[in-house]
Image (cartoon, rainbow, N blue to C red; front, top):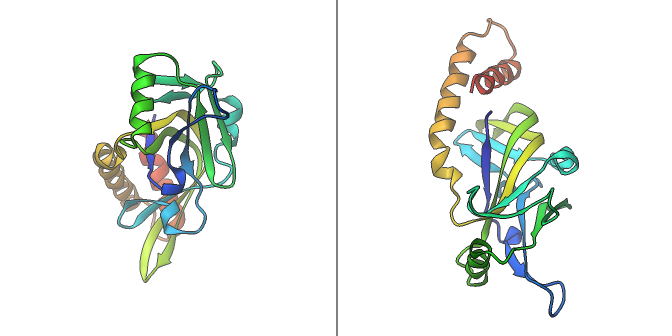
Length: 209
């Protein structure tokens, strides 16, 4: 399983503590992911020549079928909510994947609320595996780029995070996949279209984990 984690640092995707009305219990609200809207700020620059885009519609199946957890810092021992329990709700709009969590009277949840209220924690993140993606090359400012458009995912968890952990923790995995892609590309038959070779090589590299 090639589990991916992506951090959402955009100011417009900031996670907050809110109340629907005076006297209501606090809720944790944020955007786990924002959709690609044509701007560089809404794509993930994973390598110098590789960008990943979360496309509108990619969470549709997950919202219907997946039992997603609300976790703090992706830690399964720091659970804040769960869709199957009704303590976390997910939705999509034009911006991206929104979540709302009803925090429990637990130390974990109350600590998280304090971190959010003080704005010590302002970002969100989500973990997923890919069902469907489209990989192609395009030229940007004279440089060849690999563009991966993610179109459908299995969603595992979403929630507030302290740091954009994936920039450090998946660097080794990204390097390993990139190396396998290059090795598989070298094995393609002469004359194979470049886009088809890249897609086949990456699919095979991911399949082998």
